[in-house]
Length: 74
Image 1 (cartoon, rainbow, N blue to C red):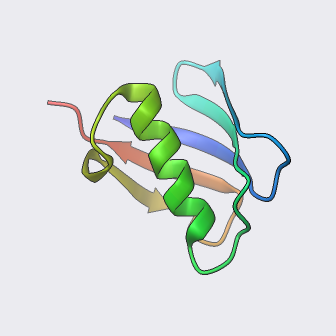
Image 2: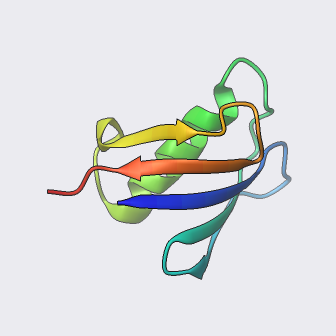
C-alpha cells in the first residue's frame, strides 16, 4: 500500500494528521539533515500502523517535503 506524506521537519511538536485515506501530514522535531527526519517519519508511521519499521520503505521524495512511502502489509 502506498501513502503520500507531506513532511514538516524541524517542528516544535510532533504530530500525524490523516488528511484522506492515503494522505498524511507529519511533523517531526528532527531537522532535514543526513536523512534523520526521514528516519523519524518512518518511526512515526510504524507506530501509527503498529508495524515494525522494516515494513515501511521510503519510495520517493528523499529530498522533498512531499514523499511516498510503501507500507508492506501482508
